[in-house]
Image (tube, rainbow, N blue to C red; front, side, top):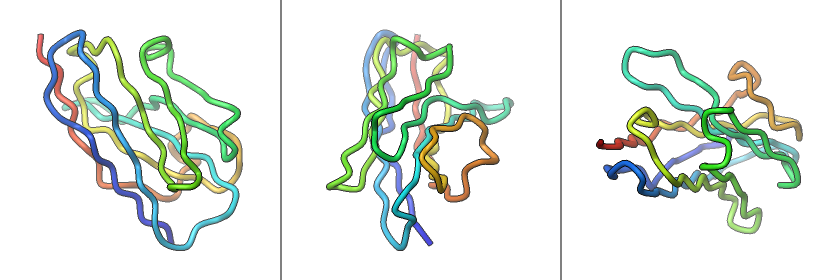
Length: 124
């Protein structure tokens, strides 16, 4: 069973940047993709970005393309989400998740391991 822990959330003004990290520990498949999802108050959880097991393929929601970048450091077993040009509508709890298999899927049912989430608040 893999354990995921997110960090890096906080309060930032619109137009600012934050970098989220997802650290993994425990037993895990050798081939896995990692995704980021978010849930704003009163809204359903939505896909943000995902990266393949080798890091060569990424997938982004249209709402964050060009502003967010997902990357992985396999040696450190971490995946990061660099968020630039943040908007108030990016305010949400951000979760990282992992799925067995290489493909960076956008459907949350594909992911079997989840972190507890980190709060991101963007003020206007």
